[in-house]
Length: 301
Image (cartoon, rainbow, N blue to C red; front, top):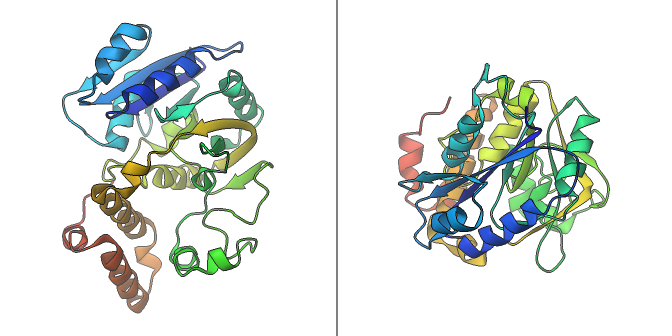
């Protein structure tokens, strides 16, 4: 049995993927791993590059861009994680979702394995992610976007009082970034998940497309009785692409993901007046296209 199964979902990030794989294969430590690259119909030669330069990587070339959660599920199933209650005995002890725009120091994988091996109650964990300028990627340690936490964040109260444990819950800005911390969720750019947690919680929800699926997975992993931890003892570089953040499609999918997450986990406990305010705010942020999702919700498990 392998210790770690690493899934990298790629779409038109050939050069970033090359750098990611080079740093990954330079990893040091006494552990075994498999690498699965799921290419979402890239048009930049990413799949050809993987075949030519990284022949030990297991390549799944999707004929279409199926999105982030479905792409990761292709990799998870390939490794033997088949769904809730269905995990092959020889599936790796841990699965790692890794973005192609990450760069790993040699000791990162080994130290993350040691961290989770020492804490059997931890179902998922992630390292300290830093951006190109050395600042913390705030998404790497998060609170769930409950209606109240979301209000604090988007109303500006979190920016005014970042050190307050109530107002700063969304990005955990009240906590020392160099200290380990139990959190609600880590980010799918580097999300290491225990095999038994996947067996209990199931795979990623494919109703999402490119945001929110990591939050939803963490939510279900916690429901299954596990904890989620941010491990500051490991630092990984995360080269976020500004172009994707400015893309209208990306912005729409972000707000669509927030709608799906809210509807799935908080709608039942939300009073109708508050519910209507939340839908209005999401529609304002996500634009008219979000109305279709409000009227005809994408089915979720």
